[in-house]
Image (cartoon, rainbow, N blue to C red):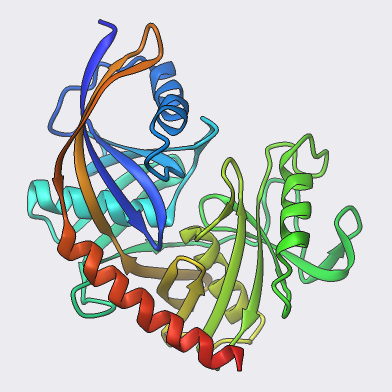
Length: 321
């Protein structure tokens, strides 16, 4: 079978935009290669939508559901914090469960529907246990990486997928893009690529994070990058343990709670905003989206997130003075 009728939710977490494909209530007839190819085809053939990646919600024999996440270049990521929240919301809508376990490439993670981060904003969480400060055989602990910079000090953090992070008070976009491209294109130091972030401290419990995401490029936000940065800041005693940390990005704000009981763990909470639903007829043999129909829009969710974003912007302007 080469033609697939797909039920799609267009959604975002902190303006990290996704197509969410429901293979939980609808039979999955994709071959494995189709996941990658549909992701690439959707991002190139639906220019009217901003798509950073495609989420696939599937049944699981080990947990309440399974999530696969493919970046816009077709590469599969181990985990996605913003995408996990959107998957959690969809699973909640289907099953009614307010807490659940979801299988990912980085393991089975726990999520919940939690109190609103802002009035009218559907908020979901994910718990990252056993955070690591190395990736494979690579470990940097607040030190220069000569291949990138002799001035900035980088650290490795693994929250299910890999990150290298440096404090940079100027949030230099050009340097971030330059370093991000180096790290993700034929880099001997990180042959599988890496997510690269700069962060800046605000108040005692507030950070701003800017990320070049592996497989995507410069993003409005990366949920695991914001999570990894919060953990790193707590480890470096720049932030307090067991205290909510507001983590800002160009796309929004999430809240992290870092704990240490032997190993570090962190709970990420933030929006899961649904924008619209669609039906897509996809021809996998010819790699063509044959038909694309909008079914429903969620104007209230869009309006509420705009209000949230305005609130965040006012707070950021306060720090810019």
